[in-house]
Length: 258
Length: 328
Image (cartoon, rainbow over all chains, first blue to last red; front, side, top):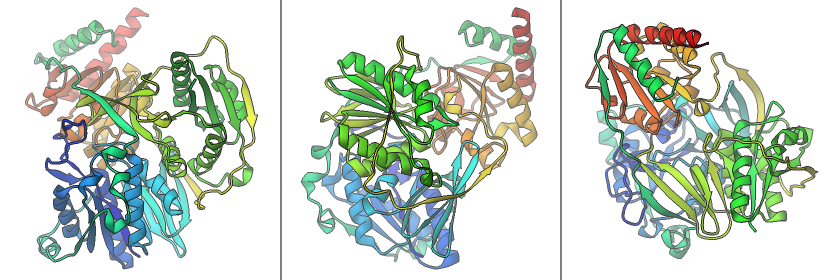
């Protein structure tokens, strides 16, 4: 069983900023998107148990190398890194075009995994769109993923528990944190990662014209960005419990919250 | 004269709260653009649910589906029917809710229609010929506004971005048949498991009491739940508490959980790590209870009670109950 994990390299959480063109500045230090790492961990567990390879697919600038190397150190067999300056500023549709073309070129694989959303975009829609483009089944919000004789079975979380979903493979699966915490790379893993292959692809490798992606082709645009008003800073309450509680009640009543 | 559609959801035979918010928003945008609003409901019982949705103004397009599709995930049934309706009637803008099913519908529609999409909207107004979408970006660090380059697109709207308000005159309900040229590749729902401890979605709560590592044990959660009950609020938690299995994942606030915007957040035993902060920093008021006055949550709390949560929280619950019964 071969599993492709879509891994987005995002700015380290807390350090995000927009550049002068109102795009996410990705020249800062990048890390693997938190939700994608849960899928990576699950993919590694599945391929360790059932055989096959975990393959990383990342679209992003040069700074993506570090999170890709970390994924390889965790146990992924190899990676495909699509870095092309023309991709900068792409909207959802163009990002979809690039990922769909890459996944097609990477076939055959059995499962493509993506995280529930990203810390810098919060879309959570690309997995579904990719499945449609590739003509494959789409299973989402997985808290468990297991192979079956003919395909894949997942638990899909809902408000009261979960549904059990089944589909033939190849399939696209979007998953959540409930799949389990990602491992830390071992020293041995870090050493081995140095010799694992990372294929660098450009738009030309995907037969995509640069004019169809990037900021110039974007169908959506950011108009402005403002900082929300700063909080005034905390008022500290250090009195003994009864008096402290009286102050909290007074504060809440003053703001009409109780 | 743009046509603006709210794509709704049905739960237990009724339109969801988020659906009513979208219907209200579609009505407002139509009024401000001189356009026309519709609410689209797809699924078994769509016509009946449509009657409830129609009181929010827009006429409802109710699409019943064949019983043979009941073992498929909801979004995989809804999306191709909405796509077929969109191809036939060419609406200009779609509003879709940022629930799990809503985001799946939006993603499938993106694949089926190639309509431009703006995600994570926390407010939508009518702009220069297209919706102007407010987003809380990077976990509330920035507020941005975006729009479409062209005259068509879909907007994913977060819960509680607008208040649902009934219209002075209800819309009509039109039951229509939609034929789909091809269903999406088959995914079957083969079972359903109910788990205890499921709660109302915390995105909709006006007051949230958050539990952090400081609660120490599942027993510690009881004082948090009691305060939430006294305040008429919901319980949220940090990832550490969810990872310990004390609180279900659906109540996790933060980077890999929910992003919430309650009027009041009471953070109990929560240090305020950045991964938690990004889930709640846009709350109206934040009160922290923590023994460590140097905890990072001091940077974004409005009131910081330095003390043992087991001494403060039960007393606060009691004081609020006494206040309520006193004023009644």
